[in-house]
Length: 182
Ligand code: HQG
Image (cartoon, rainbow, N blue to C red):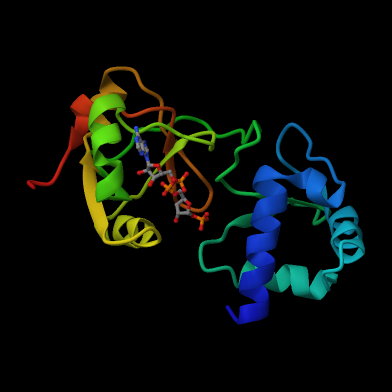
């Protein structure tokens, strides 16, 4: 993605996951908004956006952060919301182990409370170590935690797989987390 697309992707993440009111739009209960309203409101907000550019942000997005409805009229973020939305995901069995990328300064909190969603709707887990490493790296020297997801699921915790491959769950208690040796 080029710089213009990255900047637009960040802006659309802000609007479609956290603060639609910044540009005066509303999301429906599934987190969707009308594409033409979004384009108009974004342009009114002083950011250049048209349909072609929006489709490039969606299709060239490194993490497939956004999805378009089948009729092509609506858009939403695939995951990452702080606003409560119903992504209509069905729970499914996770692999035996999932991964979470974080940094050392959060470890004490995680050891105490487990992984909590913070301002997001869910805790985000990665299917592979490499992805978790990149997630942790956003904040400093990455630390990758191994999560015994299958055990959690067997004990009754639902897991969801977002449309862009991120595993979501409400909370990971510390007893299911393998911490790296200090
Ligand atoms: C940490 C990006 C202290 C947690 C990424 C994380 C991902 C705790 C931070 C997606 C804690 C929350 C999500 C506890 C969790 N005490 N710290 N008990 N429990 N934490 O950004 O997983 O580019 O909300 O380790 O690539 O980092 O936005 O979650 O460091 O897929 O599409 O609290 O966001 O994708 O941070 O990242 P975040 P995350 P996008």
